[in-house]
Length: 135
Ligand code: AMP
Image (cartoon, rainbow, N blue to C red; front, side, top):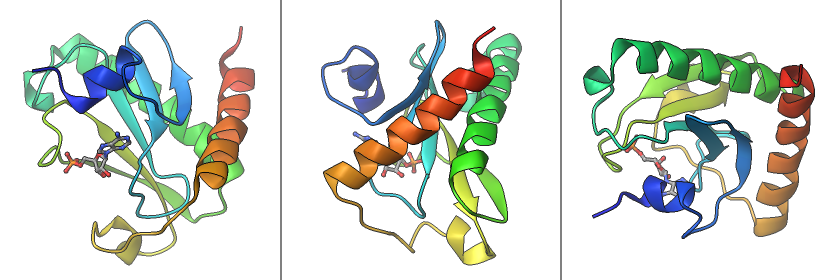
């Protein structure tokens, strides 16, 4: 069965999209640790990041870096934390989490956003990402 992220990639279910190219998509986490918490996902459905081909892994990290730079321009924070977990969704994804302290990296502290807040935040980060990556 297709993962929930494959369903997002095939547009079966919606997301608050931040960035997309041929190989990857980035969208806001629906249950965020902090404002701007984003997931970067390869379009190929692989469970564990250690099973990605090295080239794909390196491309995922490069894509995630570009997304993180855009998030950092929009969301006030000390830095962007990065985490790979995958206990809930067995489809590789990089968590990019704007953080001000270690607690922001704990997946027990959550914030709530409504549809309009998710939507406008995604659009704002997407604009910065698009501007920075359009050559
Ligand atoms: P994990 O697999 O443990 O790294 O966690 C999966 C993450 O995916 C969690 O932070 C969820 O909130 C997030 N998530 C699950 N379904 C969706 C969805 N439909 N859209 C956005 N984020 C999701």
